[in-house]
Each structure stands twice: as structure tokens, then as C-alpha cells.
Image (cartoon, rainbow, N blue to C red; front, top):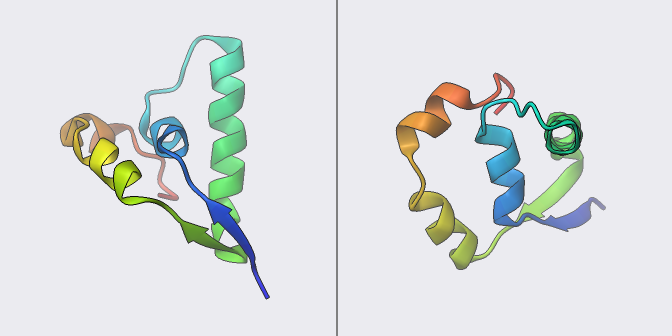
Amino acid sequence: MKRKVYLETSVISYLTARPSKNIIEAGHQHSTYLFWDQRDDYDLFLSELVLTECAAGDPHAASTAAPKSL
């Protein structure tokens, strides 16, 4: 049985944002990339609110900044 993980909007933000020059934020991005590479080990869930928030973002920026594993 897989563990269940709820994804909040910040996870999607870290995956699609340009690499940060701020070391703390860059660390969050890196940790998120590592988790994302192992996402098949989990049952992922998100809310309608997360979908709405993500849909309000800039699709061009997200598509050009997204990591290859997305």
C-alpha cells in the first residue's frame, strides 16, 4: 500500500519556477525535484483549490521553466 501525499500549490510552484538564486528557496526547489522523481511511490492528492490556483498561473512561464521530469 502506497503512502498518501497531499500536494499543495507550493509543490507545483517549486517544480515550475525558474531556479532560485536564494539558497533557501533553491534548497526547497531541489528537495521538491527529488520528491517528484519518486512520486510514483505515493498516491498523490490535491484539492480543487490547488487546481484553481495553478490554473491562474502563467502557463507559458510554467512550460518553459518546468523540469524535464515533470
